[in-house]
Amino acid sequence: MYPRPIPDDARIQRALYLGGVALVVILWLLPLLAVMLTSIRSNEELMAGNYWGWPQKFSLIENYKAVFEQTAMLRFFLNSLLITIPSVIGVLI
Image (cartoon, rainbow, N blue to C red; front, side, top):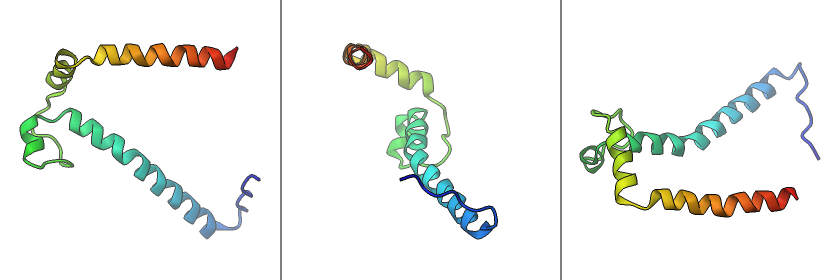
Protein backbone atom coordinates (compact mmCIF):
# COMPACT_ATOMS: atom_id res chain seq x y z
CA MET A 1 0.00 0.00 0.00
CA TYR A 2 2.74 2.46 0.90
CA PRO A 3 5.59 3.17 -1.50
CA ARG A 4 8.72 1.17 -0.93
CA PRO A 5 11.65 3.15 0.50
CA ILE A 6 14.37 3.96 -2.01
CA PRO A 7 17.52 1.97 -1.18
CA ASP A 8 20.54 4.04 -0.15
CA ASP A 9 22.63 2.68 -3.03
CA ALA A 10 20.15 3.88 -5.72
CA ARG A 11 21.50 7.44 -6.11
CA ILE A 12 20.04 8.03 -9.58
CA GLN A 13 16.63 6.82 -8.48
CA ARG A 14 16.77 9.06 -5.39
CA ALA A 15 17.87 12.08 -7.49
CA LEU A 16 15.01 11.52 -9.96
CA TYR A 17 12.56 11.19 -7.09
CA LEU A 18 13.75 14.39 -5.41
CA GLY A 19 13.76 16.23 -8.74
CA GLY A 20 10.19 15.11 -9.36
CA VAL A 21 9.14 16.22 -5.89
CA ALA A 22 10.79 19.61 -6.42
CA LEU A 23 9.01 20.01 -9.77
CA VAL A 24 5.63 19.14 -8.26
CA VAL A 25 6.18 21.58 -5.37
CA ILE A 26 7.10 24.39 -7.78
CA LEU A 27 4.04 23.70 -9.95
CA TRP A 28 1.86 23.52 -6.84
CA LEU A 29 3.11 26.88 -5.52
CA LEU A 30 3.04 28.72 -8.86
CA PRO A 31 -0.64 29.77 -8.61
CA LEU A 32 -0.05 31.02 -5.06
CA LEU A 33 2.87 33.12 -6.30
CA ALA A 34 0.67 34.51 -9.08
CA VAL A 35 -2.03 35.49 -6.57
CA MET A 36 0.50 37.16 -4.27
CA LEU A 37 2.13 39.10 -7.13
CA THR A 38 -1.24 40.16 -8.50
CA SER A 39 -2.40 41.41 -5.10
CA ILE A 40 0.47 43.90 -4.84
CA ARG A 41 0.22 45.30 -8.39
CA SER A 42 -1.61 48.41 -9.46
CA ASN A 43 -4.44 48.16 -11.98
CA GLU A 44 -2.31 49.99 -14.53
CA GLU A 45 0.39 47.31 -14.36
CA LEU A 46 -2.17 44.54 -14.72
CA MET A 47 -3.79 46.22 -17.71
CA ALA A 48 -0.33 46.64 -19.31
CA GLY A 49 0.10 42.86 -19.19
CA ASN A 50 2.87 42.70 -16.57
CA TYR A 51 1.75 39.49 -14.88
CA TRP A 52 4.96 37.73 -13.84
CA GLY A 53 7.49 40.56 -13.61
CA TRP A 54 8.37 42.32 -10.38
CA PRO A 55 5.89 45.16 -9.66
CA GLN A 56 7.02 48.70 -10.46
CA LYS A 57 4.95 50.12 -7.61
CA PHE A 58 3.68 48.19 -4.60
CA SER A 59 -0.04 48.80 -4.02
CA LEU A 60 -0.65 46.22 -1.31
CA ILE A 61 -2.41 48.44 1.23
CA GLU A 62 -4.44 50.31 -1.39
CA ASN A 63 -5.55 47.08 -3.06
CA TYR A 64 -6.66 45.34 0.13
CA LYS A 65 -8.30 48.53 1.39
CA ALA A 66 -10.31 48.69 -1.84
CA VAL A 67 -11.35 45.04 -1.50
CA PHE A 68 -12.70 45.54 2.01
CA GLU A 69 -14.37 48.88 1.21
CA GLN A 70 -15.94 47.99 -2.14
CA THR A 71 -17.07 44.43 -1.45
CA ALA A 72 -18.70 42.49 1.35
CA MET A 73 -15.48 40.56 2.04
CA LEU A 74 -15.93 40.61 5.84
CA ARG A 75 -19.39 39.12 5.38
CA PHE A 76 -17.89 36.43 3.14
CA PHE A 77 -15.36 35.56 5.87
CA LEU A 78 -18.15 35.42 8.44
CA ASN A 79 -20.19 33.12 6.18
CA SER A 80 -17.17 30.83 5.85
CA LEU A 81 -16.76 30.71 9.62
CA LEU A 82 -20.48 30.01 10.11
CA ILE A 83 -20.17 26.96 7.88
CA THR A 84 -16.69 25.74 8.87
CA ILE A 85 -16.86 25.92 12.67
CA PRO A 86 -20.07 23.87 13.08
CA SER A 87 -18.82 21.39 10.47
CA VAL A 88 -15.54 20.84 12.34
CA ILE A 89 -17.35 20.57 15.68
CA GLY A 90 -19.77 18.07 14.13
CA VAL A 91 -16.91 15.92 12.90
CA LEU A 92 -15.13 16.01 16.25
CA ILE A 93 -18.21 15.05 18.27
